Image 1: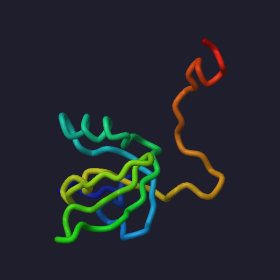
Image 2: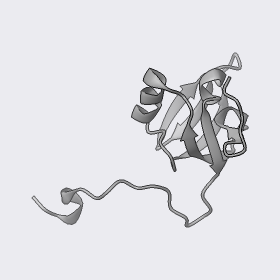
Image 3: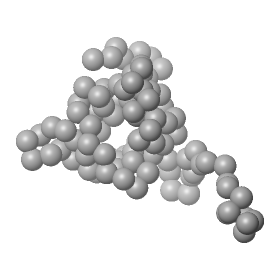
Image 4: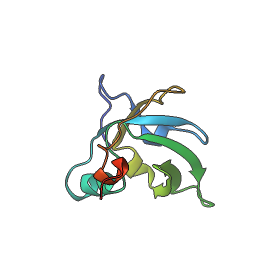
Length: 103
């Protein structure tokens, strides 16, 4: 388990069913950090907890429109902050040329 410091007090594993938060930091290193990033878990990403599986672990999270299952130990390595308020935007990717109608 990752230590809790003053800057990162809450972890993704602390969310209950139906609660939402935003990713503050990834505390994992190496391959696990890369896996989180590949799943879209980067700073500013909104995450919603959908609940546990039938046996209680792993838990399902809604991340960028996809449902991802994470074990508690892995969710402990993701620091979270308050969810975005209505109308507030998270991080967005820069627009592609196709978004402007370019060929």
